[in-house]
Length: 204
Image (cartoon, rainbow, N blue to C red; front, side, top):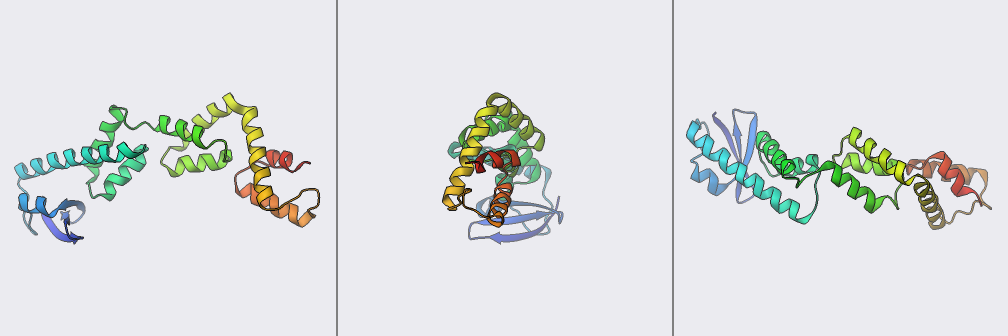
């Protein structure tokens, strides 16, 4: 393993490039401590000590992040990668958090539904889960379970959501012309509401 580049990151950190294609971000103090210099081969003993420290730092960073909010596996990995940890360290840290049940994508998704189901369409909820790093298979599974348990209530809530949106848009189905109605339907479809729910909401 050879250090092929050292690039300052702000005033206190350095991006270390190894063998041209692997990067990690270290504090300037660590760079000095491990005597990391451009074009220098990293001795195996130094590499082991450095990776051991990176593992500790990654776990500490996980603890700091998870103290304030929940993360999905993907979003936690993204945070760690964004802080300059190498891929294998990120993978190990996320796996450790999973094994300790500090990270649980199913729990995250179920909690998200409980918090937001009353104010968003099913499609919007699914897109939110995917954007937060929940896999499409898990998102569909949890949404199906949620719909099975709350089918009629979900329909009524979505009708209520649409009517509140219409009120804010000053739309009155009793007086709207065809063009206004089509424009409103298109708007609601983009919000993720089904045609069945839209029809029910537009009825007087």
